[in-house]
Image (tube, rainbow, N blue to C red; front, side, top):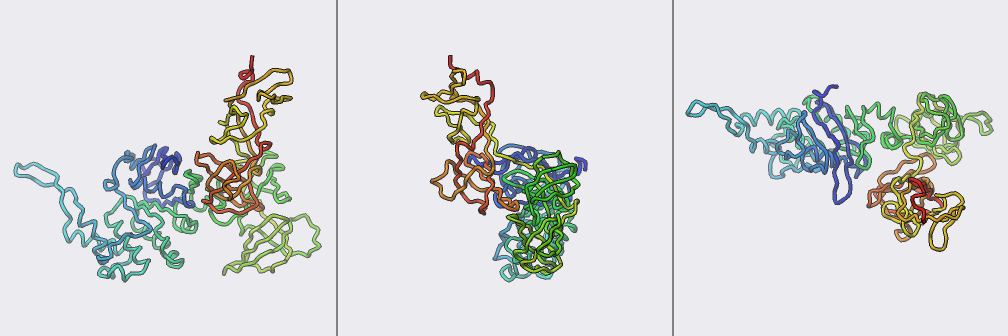
Amino acid sequence: MGNENVIISLKNVSKVFDGVTVVDDINLDITKGEFVTLLGPSGCGKTTTLRMIAGFEMPTQGTILLNGEDITKIPPYKRPVNTVFQRYALFPHLDVYDNVAFGLKLKKIPVKVINKKGEEKIKMKHLSAKEIDEKVARALKIVDLEELENRDISTLSGGQQQRVAIARAIVNEPEILLLDEPLGALDLKMRKEMQLELKEMHKKLGITFIYVTHDQEEALTMSDTIVVMKAGEIQQVGTPIDIYNEPKNAYVANFIGESNIYNATMVGKLKVKFLGHTYDCVDDFKKNEKVDVVIRPEDVEMRKVSKDYDGDKMVAVIENKIFKGIHYEYVLMSGKNEIIAQSTKEFNVGDTLTIDIEPENIQIMEKEITSNVYPDAWINKNNQVVISDVSFDCDITQLLEGSFVDEEGYLVGKDGKKYDLNDADVKAEIALDAIEMSDDHDVGQIEGNIVSIVYKGDHYQVMIRTEQEEDFIVDTMYSWNENDIVSLSIKKEDIKLTLKGDIKKYEIN
């Protein structure tokens, strides 16, 4: 779409609270009339992004444009935007009508008048009782509450109160309606009903909805566009179908719907190997490239075989079985690897099955991270490497082949030349499985907060963020919870160092 259809633009927007980056340099265009959902776990920055659009928070840096005009520093009440919050903030002493009409009774609109000199002037005037009645009646009709305008708020159900809150927001005819997890207080049945009602309201109003949720089902049900966020950054923007069928990375695949995610290797032209078997695929990557493979549970094809099967297909055993109404969900084990599958066919726990997957159902993605790399590390006077302001023991002899460290702490080459590596700039690299996590804060060298977890078939991939905003990615067999605070331990032999620049710079004459 052209720029004339863009109603909101976020340009390099960041927000920092007390030194912590909550929203990190995001760029996003939202078109007129779209239903856009900001989706992600708690703490990913979605609500902060919404509040910056509303004007309740000012960006630390970046620009927010409305219809091409900079509104970054314009206060909330001057923006054509209304917000519906999870807590509805209705007035309990007012009935439905007065709750919806409250803002209209305070509102003034510009009216052209002619003064005594015959000059045309603009005068701010309150809406008439008739105008307020008409606007309230229209808003209540849109939310299907026209019969309840005289009811006390306390007599309404949660869903009805939610509709009153929406009516109060839309009665001012905003260009954009912001909804911050508005269904979070409702029970499951009411939430599903309200999802459909909100989508229908969006069609009736024809305005832009920007919706915040951590619930992937809400996002898939209602949205025209989904913006998946993680740790303050946008991971992918697309339609529900595109994001479900073509996730950009393992995080998105894990967050949108159930997924089987595995480490894999391209072993030939349109051939990928994972879980010990080679499959045809439709994504072309370089031979021997390490990739991530995503298989949706509904795409796992299962057939029962005898236990002495000697074919070449993957074999798995059913460990668990759950009836979900329209299908069965199975947990299978192939060796140490877990496979989640869905099928309308019934099998039994303990059955041995062959597993097959059609090429078009194997989604292959470039690996985001193959190791932890810190390009701005440096060596201190104690021959330790400093990462994220924390010193780690390391082996500096790897910086010069055949070298050793003498009693004074200098690096000595096999030609006898000495080097003082204090303040030397290096790149440090640590394998994903070389970092140990613990909930004992006294055993590690550095602490951090878990910001994301992805299960990858036989292990978890966990992202830990330190107070210094440094990320450590850890492959672990153990399950953790997001927002857990953990300590990290790294052995000196597991830190690989590469010197930046010529070692002659550090030679002692």
